[in-house]
Image (cartoon, rainbow, N blue to C red; front, side, top):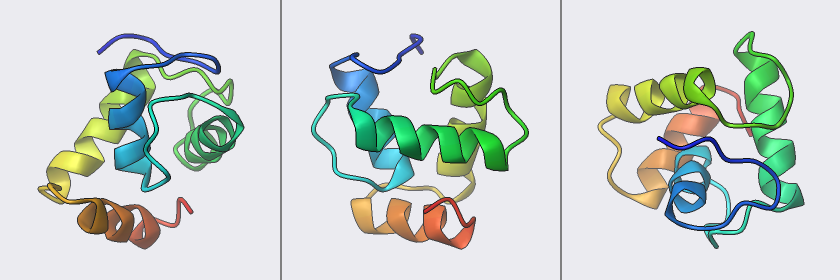
Amino acid sequence: METIRHGSRGNAVKKLQHILGIKVDGDFGSQTYEAIKKFQGQNNLIIDGIVGPRTWAILESIAEEYCIYSKEQIQEAVKSKGYT
């Protein structure tokens, strides 16, 4: 998965937002930035707001762990881990 950051747009951003259980609009704005920094802090990652290989690996492992297919399932998984 490509590295994305504040200002990025597109499908990778939508996937990120979907996993985090936040508004999916494909625009890596301030809400996404704050959500990913919180996620990084809770997962002992560098808190830089940049979604690179390490951050993607943990995000995708959460999605796989919960066999997430719907927005509701993602939101429940993210909340159960305390990320929102």
